[in-house]
Image 1: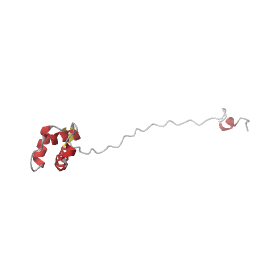
Image 2 (image 1 turned 90 degrees about the horizontal axis):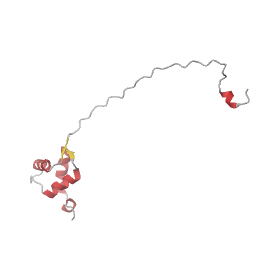
Image 3 (image 1 turned 180 degrees about the vertical axis):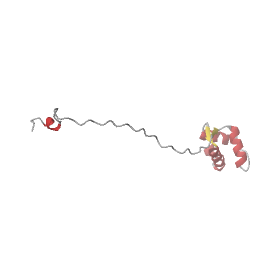
Image 4 (image 1 turned 60 degrees about the vertical axis):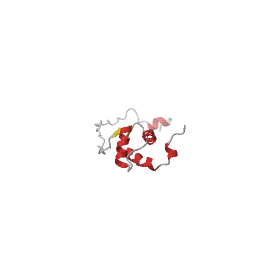
Length: 102
């Protein structure tokens, strides 16, 4: 037994070491994800909101404060269903929560 513990772990230079087999790397492909259909996004413009209100609201029109609130909440673009939800919701909201205090 050698005096140095490191030498005990390492194989002697005279001993033949087995050759390492080179393995061919398999290329793995990522699984194909099924694409879920997304609703197209559209601009949240005054005309888009007015058209949605004409379809959904019995009175048929929103006042400018309600239109500005919807634009402020939704941002630049949204799906048609998001616009529809906000048009219906804005009519049920209290006026204080819609108007911006000056």
